[in-house]
Amino acid sequence: RIISNPSSHANSGFDGSILTLLCTTGIAGTFVFVKGIRKTFISSSLTVQAFWVALLVHSLFANSLLYPFTLFTLALFKSRKSE
Image (tube, rainbow, N blue to C red; front, side, top):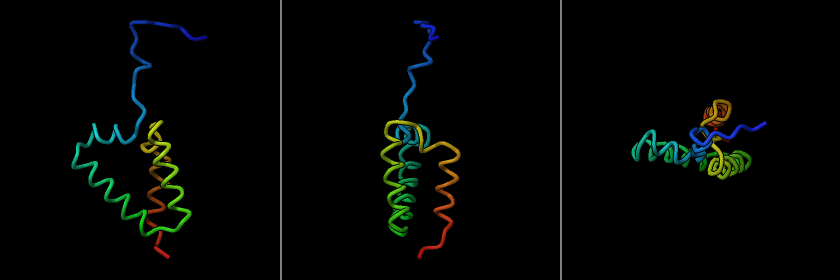
């Protein structure tokens, strides 16, 4: 059952991970993050690149880029040796 409460702002959050990153770290932090993503993307395999593209597209609509399990998976990809 959904209870409608007009005085509550619980449903008015934004979901974009990139926007959240920009708001919390500023332009400099977002630039460093994007630079790290670009470096990792270029030096990774096609499978990892496909994962990156899917994650970045999904993070435009949901806050999935900042979930702990997603960040852990990205750290595993980053720590892997380049082939």
